[in-house]
Length: 183
Image 1 (cartoon, rainbow, N blue to C red):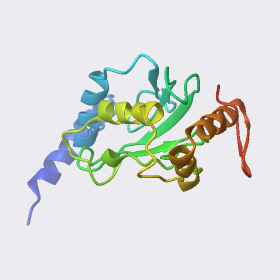
Image 2 (image 1 turned 30 degrees about the horizontal axis):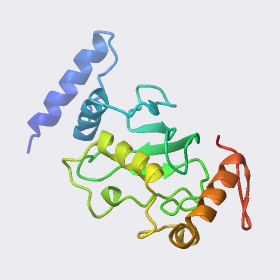
Image 3 (image 1 turned 135 degrees about the vertical axis):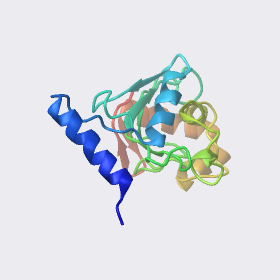
């Protein structure tokens, strides 16, 4: 059986190569959607996005959040985003590069945000995730923790939690764990 589509594809590649132009890389549906999401970003004034691998690699980027209120006021927190080619049918993988004392972010940088897990829907977008991350810093949630120790302190002694956050952000130990300065 002759595969007409493969033949047509080969002919197109040959024509492009003989014309001296490099072959055009086809974008996946995920890349197209992500491009749309990024072009429509409406970030909070304390959030920025960057592309460490250049604008050609949209599927991997970083978001910097500098909360302007709450326990984490004045800190700088960097998150990496890895977006799957099947986005938006699969949520991006988000990790916190900044070691932080937080009930919803563990010491390895895993983030507990419902829209990155069970509540992800294809109608959600990158902007929604960034606002969710910002919200974690303005209102940490002790009810669904990844760091149970921090959650217990927040629940039982908010003043001590605030002191621990300040110590960690200034670059110091909380318990046996050292945190690099992020203020």
